[in-house]
Length: 239
Image (cartoon, rainbow, N blue to C red):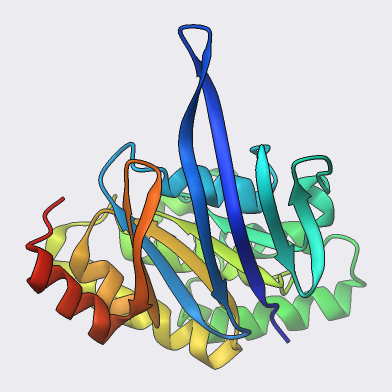
């Protein structure tokens, strides 16, 4: 069962000319187990900083980040990234070029017994539709296929929260929305809670249950896809 993610009034600052500059300021939202959220905003809006804070790569100066009721990050404590049970799918997929598809997917499962690892990898290969490509290497795959491998690898340890950092940015425009729908279907099948960041409206609306709009480090709107459509029209938002 995936986890509940609670972001409570967090603030993240960076030093700028000797003074603290807020990259994220007073952001709060919640994702219930199995929900998919998306932070939408222009470059520098703070969305990726929030993702890094959830992963444990970025400290916060105010507020808290909680997973399943356990505080992962606050102003005075931080659980190490490796102890958070958070998965991350990176913008460039970060696949190991010297490993084939099945070995990439099973990389984080080395502590499992061989038979259990084999069964888990086989399940994930089937889930992402790559069972017939298990012996291929990343350079032999299309961008969309590489993305599916990266998703399967991030799901392999069955994380409580899955984080997706601009997962479609390396794909051509024609395939982005299709693959966003496909990833959504996969995550709904596995019932994983996920948080994605993007600057593309179509990707956000295709993937998410809830969309948040980030401007200058602040979350100016958080709601369902339908309410986000209405908010965008009313305010004439552009990225």
